[in-house]
Image 1 (tube, one colour):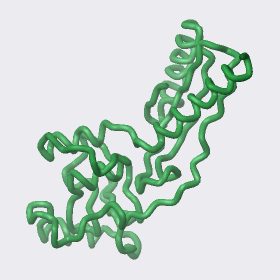
Image 2 (cartoon, one colour):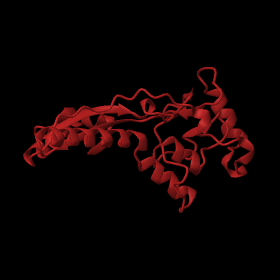
Image 3 (cartoon, one colour):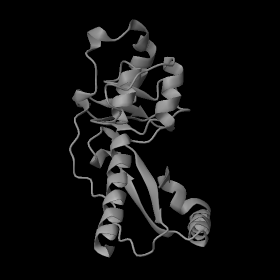
Length: 201
């Protein structure tokens, strides 16, 4: 199973993707691919990614999972009174975001500022990015996401231990995959292989 950004399919007018598929097929894999969004798998993050699944057994029948779960941003956010002071932005940043707001913000929401400066308040997070500005995403327009909140947005369980600094965790969360999506695909792969073994036997 391979994962990459949604734009992988269109990179270099589709040539990059063709080369990847050809290389996998030459290695003997029967390849399946699609784009899935983490929002459809119960986490409040719009993270569209290209997934490629391959089987060396060409008789295995595989279908990607269909995500139809709901998400709730409020379930991953900590109450403000538990957030350290250094996660709250300055009045200057807060006022700037308010000026560039393009619509009424729902509560709770995560405010995403794009490259042109426009601010969109959404009931979910845009894709976490490891190299993004410290203020790329703001909860309700006035504070940054904590380490635990970022892990929740990626679907990590509460028992997952944080053993690095917030700066390192921010990079790790941005480079990570949405756990529920990977889990759902892996389960479908297991089902496909088990079905084949059962029917061959």
